[in-house]
Image (cartoon, rainbow, N blue to C red; front, side):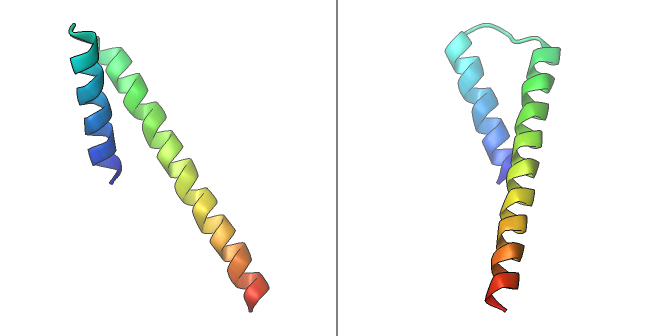
Length: 56
């Protein structure tokens, strides 16, 4: 899921810019996306744990 999203973002960005992107900018954007996905995952797990604790 995360990998396909990263690939689609990089592909759309390179098609949009029509110029080669520097490796550092590409790495930085991929890192930002990974951090965002990990944060979303932990947030989802925390919310579900709270709901489960309240339901039980």
